[in-house]
Amino acid sequence: MSRLLDIEEPAAATPRPSMTAFLALGFRPLYLAGASWALISIALWIFVPQVLDGPLSQVYWHAHEMLWGFIITIAVGFLLTASATWTGFNPLTGRPLGLLCLLWLAARIGFLAGGLTGFWIATAAELLFFLAAAASLMRVMVKGRSRRNYGLPVLMLALGAADLLYLLAALRGDYVVLMQRFDLGLIGMAVVALLIARRVIPFFSMRMVQGLQIPMLTRSGHVQMVFSALALVAGVLMQIVPPAAGGPAFLPLFMAFSLALTGLISLGQLLAWRPLAVLRKPMLWILYLGYAFIGIGLLAAAVQVSGLLDPALLRGLLARSATHVHLIGMAGFCVLIIGMLTRTALGHLGRPLALDGSMLASYWLMIAAVVFRLAALWPSAASQPLLHLAGGAWVLCMGLYLWRFAPMLIRPRPDKPAPVAAPPRADARPAQAR
Image (tube, rainbow, N blue to C red; front, side):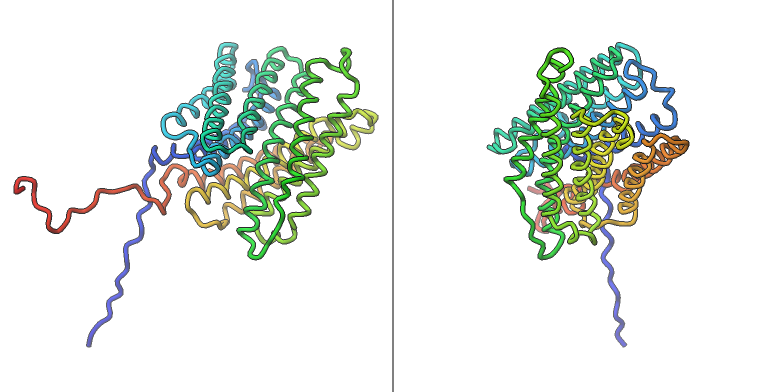
C-alpha cells in the first residue's frame, strides 16, 4: 500500500534586524524614537518631576517635550515617508537620516541633562533638526514638482521658529509669554495635522470599507487652511505688538474668529465623512475621533483667546487655560498619532492592515489616558490620582506599541527580503577549469 507523505514547506525565517532597513525611510527611526520618548518623558513628568531641574524645568520641559519632542517628531517621520510616495524621491535615507536622528537625540539629552551649556547645545541641535527636515522635504517637493505640498517645508520652518521663541521665553521664566508662544506651536501643528488628516482619512476609509464613497472636501480644506494660517499670523502679530502695549485691539477677536471657523469646518468635514460607516473599523474610528477633538479644541481655544467671557465664568466652563491645550494636543494629536503609528507603519512595513489585540488595547489605553487627564484638569481632591492614572495608561499604551512594533521597525519588510547571492548554475565550472 502506498503511503501519502505530508510534505510541509519550512516556515519563512524572520528577517534579522538590519541598519539598512531601519534607516530606509523616515518613519522607522522617528516613530521608534518618538514613541520611546513619549513613554519616558511622561513617566518622568508624572512620577519623578523633581529630576526636571534644568533651565527648561518641570512644566516648561513637559510642554516642550510633548509638542516638539514627541508630536512634531512623529509628524516629521510621517512627512519624510509620505513625501517619498508623493514625489517618487526619498528625502532622507541611510547615513543622512541617521544624522538627523542624532540631532534629535542630542536635543532630548541636552534639555533633560540640565545646565545652560546643555540647553544651548540642545537648542542648536533641535533647530538644525527642523532646518534639515524642511530642506530635505523642499528638495524632493521641487524635484518631484509637487507644488501643492510646497507649504509643508515652510510650516516645518515655522514650527522650528516657534520652538526657538518658546525656548527663549522659558529661559527668561516668563510664563505668560511662554504659553502664548506654546500656543503658536500648537496652532502651527494643528495646521499640519489638519492638512495631513484631511487627505489620509478619506483615502484610508474608502480603501478599508467596501463600497464607501466619501468626499475629499478639497474646497473646504482650502478655506480651513487659510483661516488656520490667519490665526497663526494673528498670534505672531500679537507677540510682536501686544494689544496691551498699543497693538491692534481687534487681533484677539480676529484670531478667535479664525480658530472657531477652522474648528467648525473640521467638525463639518467629519460629518461629511460618514463616521457611522466606520464604527466597526477601529483603525478608522480612532482617526475620526482624533480629528473631532482637534476641532473641539480649536473652538475651546477660540473662547479663551477672544476674552469675551468673564474670567470667573471661564474657569467654571473650561476649568483651566490648559484645557484647550490638552483637547488639541492630547485628545486630538495624540489620539490621531496612535492611529497613524499603527496604520502607516503596517502599510509601509508590508504587513496586513489588521489590528491584533495589543494594537487595539493601545487605542483604548490612549483614550483612557485622555479621559483621566481631562478629568484631572478640574480642581478636586481626585486630580492627583487621576493624573497618575492618566500617566499609567499612557505609559502602557506606548509600551504596548513599542513591544509590538519595534521588532518590525528594525527589520526588513517580509515581502521584500534582502537580496541573496544567486545559486551557481548547474553547468558552471570551477574557476580553475575555465
